[in-house]
Length: 601
Ligand SMILES: *[C@@H]1O[C@H](CO)[C@@H](O)[C@H](O)[C@H]1NC(C)=O
Ligand SMILES: *[C@@H]1O[C@H](CO)[C@@H](O)[C@H](O)[C@H]1NC(C)=O
Ligand SMILES: *[C@@H]1O[C@H](CO)[C@@H](O)[C@H](O)[C@H]1NC(C)=O
Ligand SMILES: *[C@@H]1O[C@H](CO)[C@@H](O)[C@H](O)[C@H]1NC(C)=O
Ligand SMILES: *[C@@H]1O[C@H](CO)[C@@H](O)[C@H](O)[C@H]1NC(C)=O
Ligand SMILES: *[C@@H]1O[C@H](CO)[C@@H](O)[C@H](O)[C@H]1NC(C)=O
Ligand SMILES: *[C@@H]1O[C@H](CO)[C@@H](O)[C@H](O)[C@H]1NC(C)=O
Image (cartoon, rainbow, N blue to C red; front, side, top):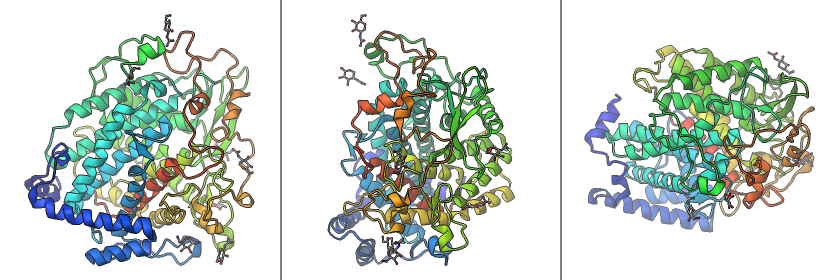
C-alpha cells in the first residue's frame, strides 16, 4: 500500500455516495473558490476562447500555473513541435476543458450521448477511464497536480459527477438494440462496464469504502449478459479460428472483433467479480420487444479460466493469421472465398482503431501470465504506428507525405482529409489513444492488481516499460495539440487533426490532401453500402445477428440498418459531433496521463 494512500485514508475521504451530497463546511470555501473560477473560465470560453486568455485568467485568479519538472523534450523539428506548455498541470486543464465541452453541452442530454449505441458505450468507457485517472491523481498527488489550480475536493466532485453520468447511462443504454447487433458491438459494452468496475474498485480501495457493491453487481451482470454473446463464438471451422464480425453477413473475420475478444476476455478474467444472476435478458423489455425467449445464463465465477483461455487462444490465432501489411500496420480483416475454409481474401484497409484495441489486450495478457513477449509485441506495434504518422521523417517535406496512418506526426484516418468519415470512423482515433493509455499504465511492482492472480514486474521490467512509454510522450502531446488546434468558436474539436497543417481550420474537405485507400481494400466502415454486395452480403443463409433472435419480425440487423435507425448526426458530411469531440477528449486525456509521471505501484 502506497504511503499516500494510507494518508488519504486517515484524512477520511468520502465514499462515492458521500461525494454526491453537499460538501462539508470545511471544504465549502474551496469549492466556492472553484465555482467562481469556473464562472470566470466559462465567461472567458464564451467570449474570447483563446488558450492564452484562459491562461491569463487563471494566473490572475490563482497565480498558480507554473511549468512542472519532468516536461517532455521540446523537439526542434517543425513537424514535431508540441506547443509551449507541456506541463502536467496544463494538460490536465486542457483535458478537463475538453471533457466539459463533451459533457456540459447538448452532446450529453437526457442521460445519453447524441450518438449511436456502440460509440456511446465507448464514450462511457472513456468516462470510466477518466474517473480512474482522477482517482490516481488523488492517490498520487492528493489531488494537487503540480501547476494545476484544481485541488483534491474539486476532484472528488468531478469523480462523483462523472460517475453519476455513467450510472445514468446504465439506465438509458439501449441494450435491446445493441444486444442484437454484431459481435464487435456486444464487446464494447463488456469493456464499458468492466471499466466502471475497475474505477469503483480503485476508488474504494483509495477510500476504504465498500458502499458501491450493488453498483458493481449490476455492472457485472450487464458485462456477463454481453460477454455471453461472444463467449462461445470462437470458431475453428473457418480460418482455423477467430470470431466472425457479424453473423448476418458472410463470414468476415476482422481485426476489431477479434482484438475486442482478446481485450474483453482478459478484462473479464482479471476484473469480473462473478455473477450469479442467470437472467439472460439485456433489458426487461427484451422479450416483449423481440418476441424471443432466451435460455438462462450460466453462472460465471470470478477469474474463470475460460476467460483466460479465450484470450490466449484468440491471440495465438491472431498472430498466425498475419493481420499486418508490409509496413506492419494491422489491416481490417479477411473474407473466405467460395468453396474455401481458409481466410484467403484479405481486406487491406487500415483504420486507426485496429492498431489500438489490441494494446489493452496485450497488457492484460501480461498481467495474467507475466509473459513479457506480450508487452514486446505492444512496443513494436506502437513504434510502427508512430512511424506511420511520419513522426520519424528526416525533413519537413518527407514529414508532410502520407506515411500509412497520418503525416506531420499526426494520426489520420483515410477519410479525414476528404471529410467523408462515417460516424463510426470519427471515433476511431479516440479509441486508439484510450487503449494506448491502458497499455502504458505503469506495471505493478509491489501490489498485484488482483490478489493472488496477477503478476508483479521486477524493477527492471517496470522501468523499461515506463521509459518505453515515456519516450512517446512528445508524440502524444503533438497529437493532442493538433486536435486542440481544430477547435471552433464553440470549443468543439474537429475530426481531421492534421487540418491545421494545411491551414484548413474550417475542417472542410481538402481533396488535394486525400490519399487513395490501399490497393485491395474495401472501406466498409465509411462506405456501408458495400455491405449489401459481394463479398459481404449474406448469400448462403447466414445466421441472424444476435444469438437467439428469431421470429418473422427479426430482420438481420447489420450495422447498416442500425445506423439508419437513429439519426446520423453527421448528415452528409463530417461536421463536428460528439464523436469528433470524444476523439479529442481521448487524445487530450492521453496527453494529461502521459505528462503526469505515474509511479509504479
Ligand atoms: C420498456 O417499455 C416501456 C413501454 O414501452 C417503456 O416505457 C420503458 O421505458 C421501457 N424500458 C426500457 C428499459 O427500455
Ligand atoms: C409477437 O408475437 C405476437 C403473436 O405471434 C404478435 O401478435 C406480435 O405482433 C409480436 N410482437 C412483435 C413485437 O413482433
Ligand atoms: C504478412 O503479410 C505482409 C503483407 O503481405 C507481408 O509483407 C509480411 O511478410 C507477412 N508477415 C508474415 C509473418 O508472414
Ligand atoms: C517508417 O516509415 C517510413 C515511411 O514514412 C518507412 O519508409 C520506414 O520503413 C518506416 N520504418 C519503420 C522502422 O517502420
Ligand atoms: C495551428 O494552430 C495554432 C493555433 O491553434 C497556431 O498557433 C499554429 O501556428 C497553427 N499551425 C500549425 C502548423 O501548427
Ligand atoms: C500555412 O500558412 C502559413 C502562414 O500563412 C504558411 O507559412 C504555410 O506555408 C502554410 N502551409 C500550407 C501547408 O499551406
Ligand atoms: C472520400 O473522398 C475521397 C476523395 O474524393 C475518395 O477517394 C474516397 O473514396 C471517399 N471515401 C468515401 C468513403 O466516400
